[in-house]
Image: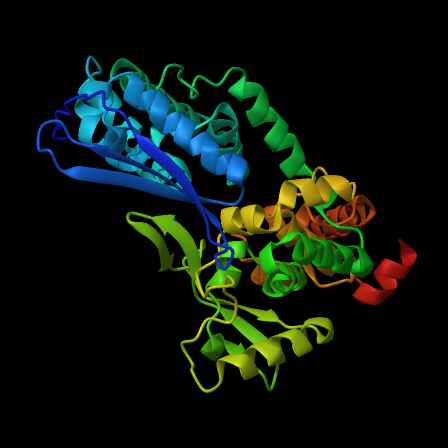
Amino acid sequence: MVHVEQLPIAVPLSPDIEHRPDRPLPYRARVRWVDPHTRERRSLSESSATVDQAQGWIDTVTAASLRGVDPSVSMQPLAQYGDANMRLALRGLEEKTKDPYLAGWRLRVVPSLGHIPATLISNGAVDRSVYGWIADGVGRSSVKNSLAVLVRVMEQAKRDGIITVNPARVNGWQAEYKKAEDELDDPRSLALSDWDTLVSLADALVRRSHGQYLGWGSVVTFAACTAARIGEVSGVRARDIDPVNWIWTVRRQTTPGPGGLIDKGTKGKMARRIPLIEEVRPLVAQRLLAVGHKPDARLFTGPRGGRITTAVLRDATHWDEVVAELGYEHLRRHGLRHTGLTWMADAGVPLHVLRIIAGHGSLQTTQRYLHPDLRALVAAGRSLSSHLRGAPAPSRPLAASLQAL
């Protein structure tokens, strides 16, 4: 990595907050200053949902400037800062250790936190990122390497005077790892109970969103009814929908990438087909009508036509506050996928079909969605099959043999 030397400057800033009510993030905070070396007038700005958030951003930039840090450097995205200073951050490490650290940075840290300036990364943001890696099935060693490189980059930012406290020093992440594993062992516990509960959630999220955008309710309903990931819902194009047989062919997902959001293949690297149930068909038909004869048009977007991620959905709808008010504190956006798979399992969808719908790599993963009583029955059936395969060839018809058991 090439180190870019940053010259610290301490300059007075001129801050202001502009209210733009027609924007999804209506409060634009801005700071302006004169560079003492070039005498050029420079500025930085950031849009926020509330005036308090905008003022908090100004306070952060001002504090960095008072410590002698160029405001444009202090608000540099973590990915950009880390790439420029990675050589310093990893100094002293053996070469064989650097490779897994750099892989953790590229595959996990940058997609989760790379777009956020180091000054705005909190302990909570790091906690949620680590928990998200665990929930996505990342191994303990990979989580450790990803967290270690994040700690080192943030420590370099601390030495550069950009931050005063390293928020990446997560205590007890091993306990969080075990907690996530326990929850994933019973994904049914993370699902909504019934259709009415889903409708109530969707309506509440719409009410809390800016401009009460109905599209958020459509995204939530569609995700739960198809057991899809939010990134996959964002990736739906009109041509992916078969409105005759009501089948959705999942071909892509929207995910954070270098330079912003990108579309790429599904998590399992293979397309899969999902039935669209009657309850969700009017919603899909309405979206198809809205995009017209444009096969590559996205079916679900944000209020300004942008791509959707789980973080966008959370922030735009005040998800955490809404689910807490409704008594579903445990519910995350991925819980919509758990909901759909749980409902399908309870409806009697065969295990091998459920696996195809979910896109799971193994039946063992899918089997966790079966009710414990159903799991016991399936296990009993397998035991009987094993017994029959190992027994001598029956001397009478199989049906008669089973009746005798």
